[in-house]
Length: 235
Image (cartoon, rainbow, N blue to C red; front, side):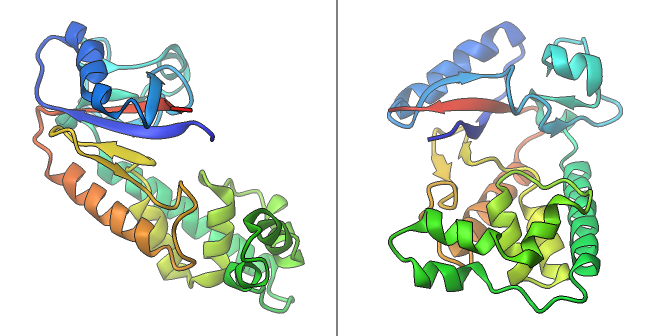
């Protein structure tokens, strides 16, 4: 299984030197899900900082990559220093560009068949269903339109076909902040079922997870801590 994007939330801690130790302690009860974590890898520029956030103050965790090329991003900070609104706007704008470019590129083509059709055709072979879905000419053009995908490209391609532009943009906004898993300050681990390939074609479970995660993160106190981690799944 590939790496998991894990958000860990902790209660207020004034000493940044304690943060790594507290992350270890918070994840210890979930060793059956997460074997190890890193703050320096794939998801180290996930979180957007507010303009007034002071890098180098000890209150913001930034990798070398973020410090050199993405100064407005980080992998951990107090909730009050993070700009979830900017993250959602960024994802929504990218989704709108992608949808518009794809719609223009496929204007002369017949509508693509939804992924659910291929899932019904190959109920025991999701990999083959995905391959046949993506082989459609209407989806092959996605490689040439010059707008980047979000993570989980296959799911985004399926959403392009299934949703209108407004719903597609809303979907992107919902996915901007939560990762694949969310560990709350109380030790509850929430998992997006889409990451486990256990969701339905309408992404019902994923939508439920995202609504819960976004609500929790938005209501988190400004002094609480949020970390974006690269989690290695347990074998």
